[in-house]
Structures are given as structure tokens and as C-alpha cells.
Amino acid sequence: MSSNVDLNQRPPYDQVIQDIADYVLDYRVESTEALDTARNCLMDSLGCALLALRFPECTKLLGPQVECTQVPHGARVPGTSYRLDPVKAAWDLGAMIRWLDFNDTWLAAEWGHPSDNLGGILAVADHLSQRRVARGEAPLTMRVVLEAMVKAHEIQGVFALENSFNRVGLDHVVLVKLASTAVCAWLMGADREQLLSAVSHAFVDGQSLRTYRHAPNAGSRKSWAAGDATSRGVRLADIALRGEMGIPGVLSASEWGFYDVSFSHTNKDLATKPEDKRRFSLPQGFGCYVMENILFKVSFPAEFHGQTACEAAVRLHPQVKDRLLEIDRIRIVTQESAIRIISKVGPLANAADRDHCIQYMTAVALVFGGLVAEHYEDDFHQAHPIIDQLRGRMEIVEDPRYSREYLEPDKRSIANAVQVFFKDGSSTLQVEVEYPIGHRRRRSEGIPLLEDKFRASLATHFAPQRCAQIFALCKDQAALEATAVDRFMELFAG
Image: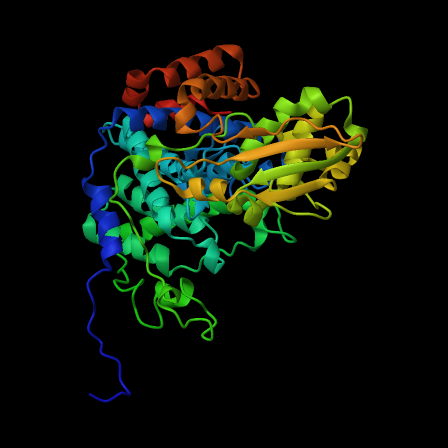
């Protein structure tokens, strides 16, 4: 055959794409622990969304793209009066959930926040339920929403176990788009061919760079990037449901596929070893593992690699609060991932820059004995120069054990240790926290605090009677699962 032509034989869908489609279509979520955790995740995510409504930088981005647009059976955006098409509603809710860096987290070779997918899931489920009711049909129930959450968490989280998108410069929201596309297509009633098509389009899309998460370019796009990704998932699912053909070899196509274009070294001089030709590694099948092991941010709205540093700093606060000017240096012992993503020196330009700085969050916790979203704002930062003074006295040290146990499946610790040294030669003890309060190993301790966090979030927006009604429903697994999605969303209307 001539070398001047391509063999135009259409391949079967890449096996990874088939595995995703078969999981979403065929898997039945029966794990009581996964469904219970999904319920807590639902509460926490919606609480985070309500808290975000206090920040104008978030609310200015919400609402219809064309003012006064009327959408029949429009999806509700919690805490607001908006009724939007599902694509924009997913964008808004996804951005709200993620805005304060306070929703759940998954840490492995890749990082991410699987509850980001809830923007697409709830927007689609609410819209579909309203349409069903209008036709005299039964609406979707919240049990379906919880199952969709479990599946979206699983897709995003299993991909993250051994596939590092950040190592090739891509942002983890590629996995939000992937999971949202698959699960939203399933909610919309896609058959297998439509699901395969939808998932293939998620990979063929251009993918976000991580530029906006790292010094010196960290900025507020990281707060709405996940909303953008879950919204794109809804759009791609809709396109596939309309009969758009898929791209079967999107991953493996030589030269033009995702693996060659986006997941291997772009510098051909570096691509000399087999590992430079990356392919996805999925060490286990899809089930309920990720939801059962998800990490909650219970105490601090801060990037998760620094959560235990904040916990340690809060414990040290009573010993240092009256000796701040006597501090000579502060030693933070941490894991490699924290060093790579949130260790930075120099001026911090905005709130998004500060909540991704382990030095900043640790300094605030040492000085004030806590950390809330308002501590990242410009006015607060400018009013307390002691924060930057302490940042300048910090040293960051990697502990190889922390880095190793961070990746071990039976541990997945996110350890940090903090010690303060004073000018007179004295020091505090080193305070080490290996597992944050939101870790599965601390569930019994963490869930009551997570519920308190949700109640406090509700109280920022709703009257006491509505708060009590919402909380009582969300606490009752059976009642919540039986509730129609459209009725549930009515409770959160602003």
C-alpha cells in the first residue's frame, strides 16, 4: 500500500470509553455507605454554594447570558431566583460550589473535587423532572441524583488514581467534564451508542491548562473552571442525544489522538523513554470506592494539601498568639504535592492566590486561631501585615514518608507538621496531623461537624423555619431519596 494515503478503516471505540459507558449504563449503586456519603456530600456542596453568594466576584457571573431570558421548566440555581437552561444553570451552580475552595476533594496522582459534577447533575435532573411533571409523568427522585453523584465521583476519582494530568500541564477539570458528560447523558436517557459518542467528544475537546492555579498567574478562573467543565458536560451530552456521531479512536489515534497530542511529552527530544508515550492506567474497575473514601473540607476553606497544616497551626495558636513578634522562624513539614501546588513566596495578588498558598493559610491560623473565606480578601490581608511577616519566616521541608503515604491506597494521608521557633532559642513542640478531619478515618468525628457547617451555611440565606425543613430532610436518608428532584430544588429557591 502507498505510504501517501491513510487507511480509512473506522476503529471500534477505545476500550476506556466503552468501560465508562458500560459502567454508567449498567452499574447499580447498592452500597449503603456510598449513598450515605453522597447524601452528606450533597448537603456540603449546596452549603458551599450558598456561602459563595456572599461574594460579589462570584454573583456577578451568575444568571442568564441574555438578560430577562425565560426558559420553560428552567433549572433552579440554589439561593437565587434564576431559572436557566440546564447548560447555564450547571455553570452557575458548579461555580458556586467551587468558589470558596470548600467542597470535597480527591487526592492521588491527580487532584480534584468530584462534587464539582453536582452542578450538571442537579441542573439536568431538575429540568427533566419539571418536564416530566408537565407531561403528567413521574419526576426523577433524589435517589437518582445520589446514584449519579456516586458514578461521577467514581469516574473522576478512578481516573485520578494513577493518571497525572497536571504532569502534562492539563487541569484536573478535564475529569469533571468527562464525568459530567457521561452521567448527564445517562440522566437524559442516552443509549450505549449515544453515551459512547458523548464521552468521545469530552476527550476531543480542547482541555484547560493549569496556568490559573499556579504562581505567578493564580487567579479567580480556578473558582469557576469546574462550573465551566460540568456545564460543557451537559452541552456535550445534549449534542450526543441529538444523534451526533462520535469519534471512536479519539484517545488512541496516531498523531491526532488525545494520547499523542495531550498526554505525552510535546517536546520530541524528551520523548525517548516508553513512559513518555502515556496511556491511561486504571488500576481498578468502577464501583463505589471514590465516594466511600472522599475527603471533606470540614474546618477550612483552603486547598486540601494544606488542611492539616491549618489544623496544626490552630493547635499552636494559644502558644504563639502573644509572642508573634518574637517568632524567629516557622517550619512546615509537608508532602511533595503540597510543595508543587501551594508553596509560594512573594506578593499574593488576590484571594484566589492566597487560598492556594500554604504559607498564607498557616500564618492566618497561627495568628487568629482559625481560617474563614473572608481571611483571603484584599481588605483583610492589607489590614494585617503580620501575615506576610510570618510568611517570610517560613521554611518548607518535604518528609519522604508523607509523600509516600499520600499515595498508598490503604492510607492516603495528607500529612503536615508545624513547629514555631522563637528568637530566644525556645520553640513549641512540633504538631503533626496526618489525617485531616474530613478523611474517611475520621468520619465519626467529622460528620457532626460537617452537619454544623451545613446548618451554618443555610442560616446565611434562609429563614430559620426553612433551614430546619431543609436540614431535617437532608438528614433522613429514606425521605431524601424518595423526594422528587423538582420539589427538593424548590426548597432552595431564593
